[in-house]
Image (tube, rainbow, N blue to C red):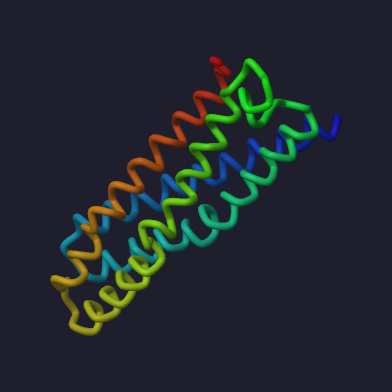
Length: 165
C-alpha cells in the first residue's frame, strides 16, 4: 500500500466517523427539541454533546488535514482553476468545507451552545422545560446551520465520489 492510498483510506475513515457524529448530534438535538420531559431532554442533549465533542469537532480537523495531505501526496490540483487545472471538484469541496467551518465563529455557535447548557441546567433545577430552554433548542441559527451542514456534507460526498468537473 502506498502512502497516498493509506492517507486516502484514513481520510475516508475519518470522514465516516465525522459524518456519523454530525448525524448523531443533529438527530439527538432535533429530538430533544420535541421532547416534553426535561430528563429526556437532558439525556438527549448530553448524547448530542458527546457526538459533537468526540466525533464532530476533533475529527473534522482530521478529515481536513488528511484530505489535504492526500491531495498533496497524489498531486491532485487542490486549487483547481487557480492552478490552471481543468478539474475543480476538489477545490469546490475544500471551499464548501472551509465555508462551514468559518460559519461557526461567524454565527457565534459556541456561545449559543454555552447558553443552551445554562438553560438546560436551570431547567433541570426547576424540574421542567423552561422558556429559555425551549428558545435555545429552537434557535433558528443553530437549526438552519446544522441542516445546511448536512446538505454540504452530502454534496461533498457526491463530489468526491463522482468527480464531475
